[in-house]
Length: 65
Image (tube, rainbow, N blue to C red; front, side):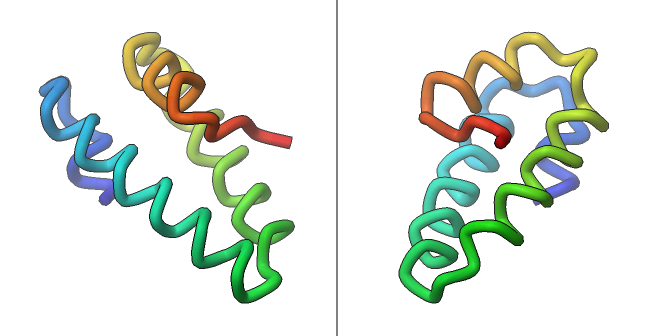
């Protein structure tokens, strides 16, 4: 996933966001939502210079918090 996010290719960003949505659902199911939120926050911080990626995360409902 980091490889997909590290690129500047929109299609790979879309794939990474889909994977993150799946991981988020699993984290909720397994009661690890707090851990997921922390990791998502760090991911968003590391890639804050990629506005299109941040928009994709926002549009997918993957908010840090």
